[in-house]
Image 1 (tube, one colour):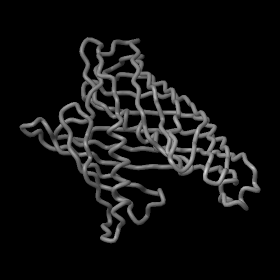
Image 2: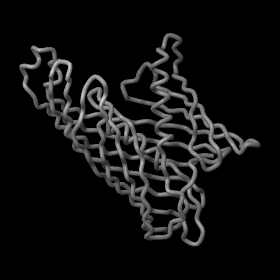
Image 3: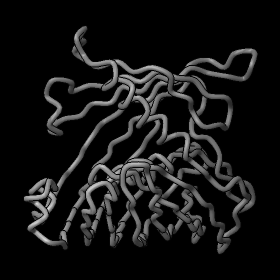
Image 4: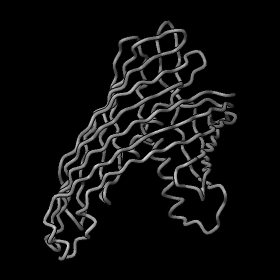
Length: 285
């Protein structure tokens, strides 16, 4: 869903930069022997309108599929990211301590992720810990939670390019997600434009184009069309080489048709999603 997509896009904005004679290079995302504070806020609006023959409920299709859905979801987090010393293989450890106040996760208000990264490469997170610890916690839940963070880093695709003011570069990323239990793929084109450099701060504009693909499964046939767009902006501190602030707006519209040949049941969904996110980031060591 688009809120998972935003999580990935927010992480996608966390790069360091270099500056020389008004040239900016995106790289990173972190440096060895450093500590960062990251705060995230996002809002997600979901509107689903089903279209189909309601008599199909009597034939085995769940009644809840025919009920319109309107949801508003907010998310906030505070994280401390600590990096260790660079070793002989040019790799350094990373620990992310993520606090999740007010997100319906009262049993696990803190999540700690462990991983490593090479210089100017995407972090590889390999384990996760929930605080307070719970020996009975389902391993599948742990694996799914860790995979979400892994995907967020795995699908980062920054343009490794020396920007001059006015330069525009695009990247493409494919992100798997899900909606109503159906596997979807978001094909995202991100347009980066350096618009200004003032007092050691680089200012970028972002534009997103989203195309949604519908792979078929063996059980049901899913097709339709989905697309969206978004705008955003972010700033970087040039001399200190870290991200400062990012704000993103996203909107997608999807028509999804689901057909089950086993029982000849068919239903169509009209889906609109809107999201707004704000990310602030600063180096504290």
